[in-house]
Image (cartoon, rainbow, N blue to C red; front, side, top):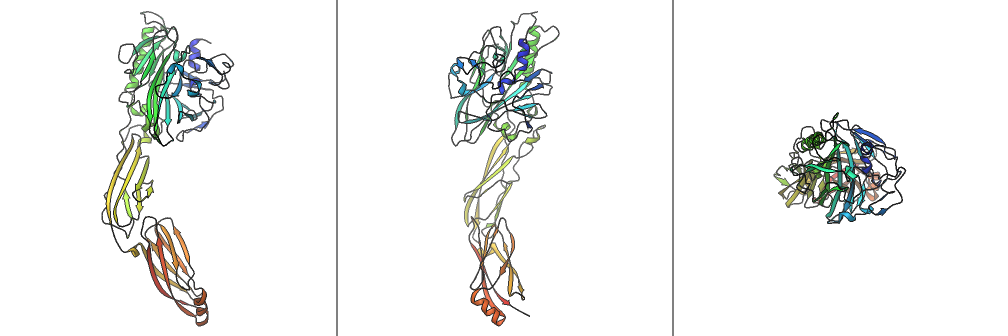
Length: 505
């Protein structure tokens, strides 16, 4: 197998390192066999071959960089050679001293999605974060594969880490870098990669005029224009077998941080002169910098898009609450956030509207719909609405006064019907808020009904005890019932009704 073939068929071996902690909720597709052997082709018809048969457990059976994990596998090959790995390390870690415990490693489990153009791997806990990686091969017109790494913080405190892509340890051949590799171009035109660079191009030949290329030239794109987070460290030097870049990032509690990079193969047949290939790779890297948001985020979930740190995001959504007027404790207040909006992004249907609504009131009520109906006690109140869209989150707050009103207006008693054959009756009770209705009274059987939302129920009235005996003896009896309504966040409402019970014609 030639070096070129090894590169092409082992791109995603570097990505097969994950633990089986589940797949992202937004991923669609079917789980594949453990070996995950798949051929993918990008828009330039370059092959990205997922081939894990060389080692049954890649990353768990290797010897590299001073780590001895028990051998190299069936063909004595490094399972993450040529295309780079992911490390999640403590902030400021010495990148030359990283260990296997900081690597993104695990069984060969994956999920095929997005029309068989994306492979998504399970979630692995690292440094207090839930880490997940996927590879998506662009159908065109651009070449290359999008490598997406997401860091989700499930805890209640911020987590700071260094996220490393590539090979900082010096394992020959990773990301196509070895003793014959040269840094041919960078985004700033200097040919020397620094944290100010957004991309770099490497080739395995010196860029001499007329020199015929051997292996395809590679473009490595790690940051996009306008991204909030830039790389903090990069290593891309001539005739070196280390090639990597790293981001120092803090992930807030409950948040997701996502990082996008690209690996782009480029060759210019039939002559394949090195300078031609470098020029083609540079144009592909530059094209990535100007690609549309639809191209950048194709197939990603709203949470992944909103969490992207190193590329521009869609505009943040706007949260809006309709002003509350003439609110009283006699009826629930309707808080309306339906005017909240997300920026429309052509070609991104998942960004067409608000993804989530989250209401919270000062008395503890919550909701997840565009509107919230809630009964408030008299006095001043506050409510906040947080909306999520592809560009992130936005919050709006409103304050309003709830005037005191007759509690009974929360509860309306209606028509009474008598059942002379049984000596019973029914009474209609309308509750203007969700809660618990209770009918009780002297000589009357107690009845309770729970309402999940405002509505009308029919409550039975049945005599018991001495009243029941009097009804059976005289054929009639008078009772007084008390209907009460209790609802969280609302005052207790009560209404009474006197009615006769009759038995017989």
